[in-house]
Image (cartoon, rainbow over all chains, first blue to last red; front, side, top):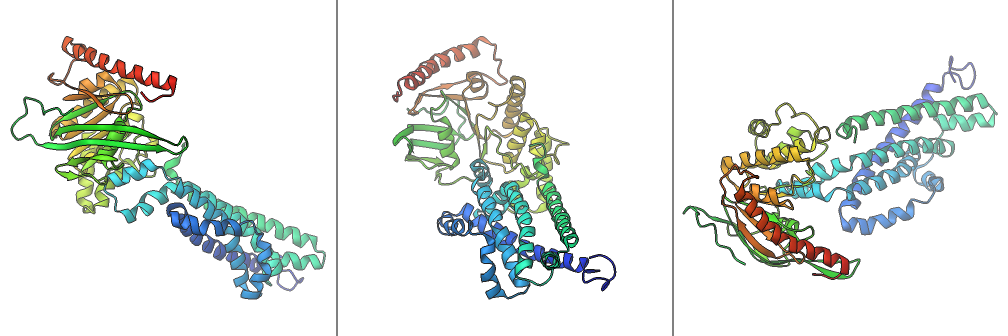
Length: 212
Length: 277
C-alpha cells in the first residue's frame, strides 16, 4: 500500500483509502452527532417526544446496521451516500440514548436554582440542561465514533468501491493477508486517534468535573 | 394562629409576606396515600424581619419555603408577597439551598453572574457588580475557581452571593449551614448576620438547630410534627450580636426545647406505629 503508485496494484494507495474512510467517518459521525444530540434533548426534555419518538428508536435500535445495507444501496447507490447513511444511523443510537438519559437526569435542584435566578424558559435547555448532560453526551459520542469506524469498513466492503474496507475486501480475493493486516492496523490507529481527539475535547469541555 | 407584628414595629414597617391558610398535600403514589405536609399555616412577615422556622424533620418546613419560593403550588390557601400572589419563582426571592445548587460547569464568577446575565444586565455593569459581591462575601481571589474546588463554607458563600447580586427583596434559606462543620457554621452565621444587617431584607431561614434559630431570628416559628402546623411563635428580643451563653438566651432555648421535644416524640411515635400523629 505504501511505495510508488503502480509498483503493485496496492502501492501508493494507502493515503487515498485512508482519506476516503476518514472522510466518510467524519461526515457520518457529524450527521449522527447533530441529529443524536438534538433528538436526544427532545426525548429527554419533552414528555411528548419521549412518548412518541423513543419507542420508534427502541424498535429500530436492535436491528443490526448490516441489515440496512441493501436498503442503503437501493436508495443511495454504490456511492458515499450509502456509507454516510450506514455510519450515521449506527452512530446515532448510542448518542441519542446517552443524550436523552443525561438530559432527563438533569438535577431538579439546578433547574429550580436557574428559575429562581430569573432564567427565561427557553434558555433552560442551552444554559442548564445541556451543560448538565455533557458528561453523558461525551460518552455517547465516544461510543458513536467507535461504531463509525466499524461501520465504515462494513459499508466499504459492501456498498462503496474505495476506502480501507474496500481495500481489505479486494485484498481478500487475492489472499493478500499482509494488505488486510495493514488495513486493519490502519483502522485501529485512525480509530484510536479520532477517539483521542474526542477525549481531549471532552476533557476540555468537562474541565469543571475534574476530580469529581 | 395569627401573630401580630412585633410591638416595637416602626411605623413604616410593611407586611412583606402574608401566608393565609396554607395547605399542601402530596400524594405518595407508591403507597397510595395522601401526605399532608402543611395544614393551615398563617403567618405574616415584616419587610425588615429575620424569621427562623424550626421543626422536627419531615414537618413540612422545607415545603413552606418551597411554596413561598414558588417552586411548589399550594393545595389550599395562598402566599402573597407585597400583595401579589406567588405563582412562580423569581429573582425577587433569592433561595439558598442546603445542597448549594451551584452550577458545577460555571466558575464562581459565572455562577454569581448567572442571574444578571439572564436578565441582560450590560456586561460592564455586570462585571462590576459581581466583583463587588465577590468581595463582600469574602471570595476575592476565587472568582476563577469551579465549585468542585471549594469547601462547603466557600460554596455556600457563592450561593449567597449569587442571590444577593440580584438585590432580592426576600432571602429564603433552607438549612443552608446544616452540612457545614461547627466552626464553619458559626463563621457563616456571623457573616450572614453582617450581610443581612447592612440592608435588612426580609429573610426566612429554615433550620432544625434551636441555637441557630434563636441566634439569627427576630422571631422563631416552631412547627408541629406532620401534618405541619404552627405550634408557637417565639419573639427573640435580644440585641444582636447575641451571646449564646447568656441567661436570657438560654431561657428562650429551654422554652423552645420543651415545645420541640413534644413534637419530636410525636414524630418518633408515628414512625413506630406507622400511623400519622
